Image (tube, rainbow, N blue to C red; front, top):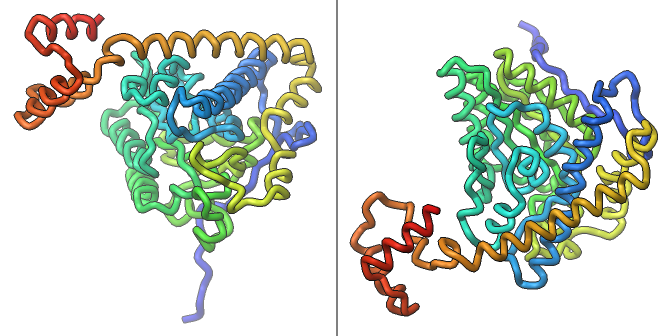
Length: 378
């Protein structure tokens, strides 16, 4: 018998609506009113300014090492606005704009990067998982949540995020496969910022795109301009609607760039050229969105300035609150690390707790412990 081609159910597309010069494809332009557009820009700008301030705090020794998210705002915010309150948001560690939009307080995020796990707790009533630093581990959690949604018969959608480096992890492939097999309502958002720390995409994989992997798992896939918030919005809106209506998962690859080091402990000049950085800076997401908002007469230069000043004041207040919180229990109590892990503390940890208390000169009498417990619960 002769060889015959196999027809695959999905074709791969690239979507861009708003270019770096502010030009927009009116046929693809999503129908968003001025209020919605202004709100989207504000959350993106808020995340950018927070990211810049966090870098200063880290250099001053007021927070620890952290991964910046500048340049990734369009992917995070442009997608998260399409999910509802009861849907699940499963971030990696560059989804600052999406987390703030979902209701995470800046004070809590600051406390997390100051080294306190208390800051990792999602806000009450928000269906978010904590920041996931172990690469690609959160994708399995997202697939599991989606499978659970199907078992319960509800219509909730799961949106999760990962980088191009994470796409090379086994956890990523397992999550994509399980989600596809069980038709779990999961939208997989890949932030392709060109580098897995210092390893360029060309040394990670032979395929042209990450999005084409979707076909190998039997799900729709699309590559979008990840610096174009309108393109991200449109592609993720379609994926969310498909998932909510029983159409299963989607893989969306957002093509972007990491404008900062991988973390504050990284030196990208050792593996990236200035010319490459300048090329991508011209495609930066906030500047092009500003041009779009001006052209549509949604915002003026005065509006941008006022918004920037308001955000700066909000950040100032959040930093004051976070640093003050760290001076008081439970954050100021080093013995609190032994709480909330076991219902009954194992003997070896009881011994370690007592030893630490002795070294620090902390009174662990029953009366003192009860008072501390009341303070932690208040």
